[in-house]
Length: 63
Image (cartoon, rainbow, N blue to C red; front, side):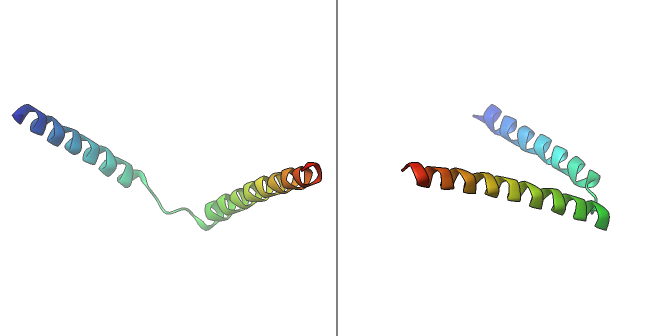
C-alpha cells in the first residue's frame, strides 16, 4: 500500500515538472502569428462546411 502511494506521488511530481517545463516555453503569439492562425483556421472551417453542404445536398436528392 505504501509503495502505491509513493508511486502515485512520484508520477504526479513528474507530470508537474513536465507541465512547468512546457509553461516556461510558451509565449504570446505576435499579431502576425495570430492573424495567420486565424486565417488558416477560418479557411479550414469553410472547406469542411462546404464539404458538408455538398454531401447534404447530394443526399437530399437521393433520399
